[in-house]
Amino acid sequence: MNGSMRKLIVIPSILSLMMIALVGCEEDNGIYGSGGSNNITLTSFANSYDSQVNATAIARIDESYRTGAREIKIKNLVNNYSNQSLNTLDKTILANNFEGRLENKNIEVNGRTVKRPIYEKNTNNKSSYEVTYKTLDLSGVKADSYLAGNTVSDSRGIITSLNHYPKIPATLAFPAGSVCYIPVVTSERAFLAFNEKDKTGYSALDKWIDAAEARFDDNRGYSTSKFGVGADNKQHAAQVTFFAYKNQPAYQYNGVEYDTGIYEADYVAKGSSNPNTNSFRSVVDCTIVNEVAADFLEREIKRYY
Image 1 (cartoon, one colour):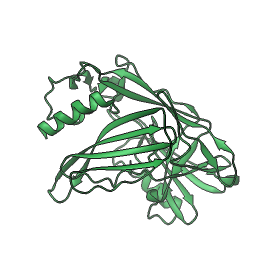
Image 2: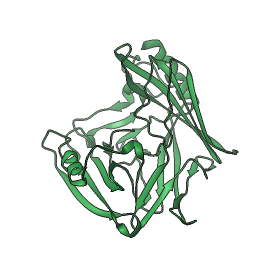
Image 3: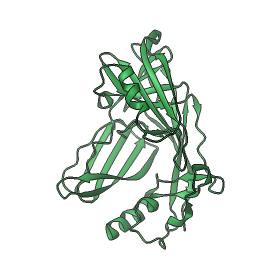
């Protein structure tokens, strides 16, 4: 569902599946799968470091799903974006007494729901996994629609890419027709997902655990659990969870021993996620947007950065 394994407890919506290389300031496209009818395009914006100019690079990322295929477009807006943090390769899936694959095929799109079955290794059995995107109207929303509190529970409002790019004047608002997509993940089973790009340099899972437990240098509390996954639960895995601390949310790290390597993994819970959609109750994450909102952000990023 990004290269670092610092994960918000609210699990990311999309498990990326293919890495794309960028050169210069051109658009670079990757299309995987075949066929197509219904479709949805999800746009976000990302930063990286451009070593050639010793400055930040900003890119627009359009991720489109249609029945049978997935397409990614990455467009440089400022300098030359490096996609090393993007991990879009197929994923190995490990769960309780289960090993399978999540691949860039057999995709089904129905309105704002993207279904991607997970096929069990060496069988035709499959486990259901899907993401439905709720919508929220961004028309008229400005950067000050988000109010940061002293703690996570005190924060309110709608956080958008306007908050990530403060050079854009706070008086600017999203135009009419702007919409954000809030992902709701539904999975038949809890699982860990990873691929070769997630392989670490640790020689043993216990060494990964030691490093994971030391990722923060403050006094926040954490818990660590070990468990078995995969066929007959023979693969060893661990989960390190840091509790919410001051104005920072809870974070979760997952590691798994697989074949001869130690991998960091995404974790997806069983059942359906329940992201907040009420800006008066808590913070609404609105960083995935439609074309109208994306065109507005692209224009203003180019203007002020």
